[in-house]
Length: 360
Ligand code: ZN
Ligand code: ZN
Image (cartoon, rainbow, N blue to C red; front, side):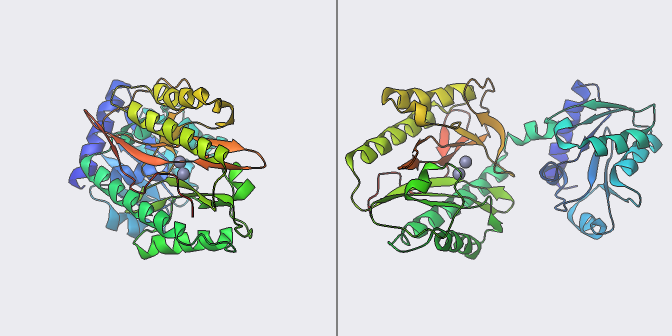
């Protein structure tokens, strides 16, 4: 086991002890990657008081042996969850935590049947995800690189915004550039939205061509060394009318206020409120139809949620996005998004692209 994964497993074991559990069943691939380095898509990891076992099928056993240290690799032949249950029974593991949000009813039934009557299965949700919200220095260094890569790609994409270009062409170029710069791929489906399509927060790129005097929303993220980045910029092609300039100013001010509210100990709800009250000052809060941000790491959307009323407190090592927006149906939308890391006494903006209003 590598130094990093044994430290993470030790932290998980302390958490299990405090919950009175003998083992945790880890069934979410980013969670088992975090704990062991295994990048396969199928399997289940059992982290016990002493040992760790990864139950997987023949497609992944060689890979699992190569990628992990100190983890027992068990190849299952029958169904995965029935085999995991059998394994728990055979090893006399009695009180086992599992993530109820990550198992289907059929998987749970297989597990239950295999484990027999003497094994107690206890929902223990988000245990590994909770550990993942506190990134260590190596993870933060990787996220910095992923954020800089996305910032470079967004600046490159802005240069392609000429009337006549299609949303799909720009999206394809964005994903090509990401890979050229070393990313393993996009962290999510790239959003390129022109004109009134920019009023849809999750617009899929289409064959629509860019016209003069339109807003453009570019929202993209790259996966670099397993870690995700996520950045949005909004540009105006042409000379923007006064209301568009005012909306942009309000969104930028809301984003700046929310970033300023990011500090260790602040609740996610307070950060969200900073953006929302700024927009309310411009009577634009009704057009801000989503939450202010989300946690970022091995997954593009992970804990914590930076949303209205969220009581979760920010901790050093947490990385979140701050992405307020306003959406005017039939007209267009404006969103500005950056990735922010929380440190002990300060916060750090990981993304680098300029945020000033841009007219091309
Ligand atoms: Zn985004
Ligand atoms: Zn985002």
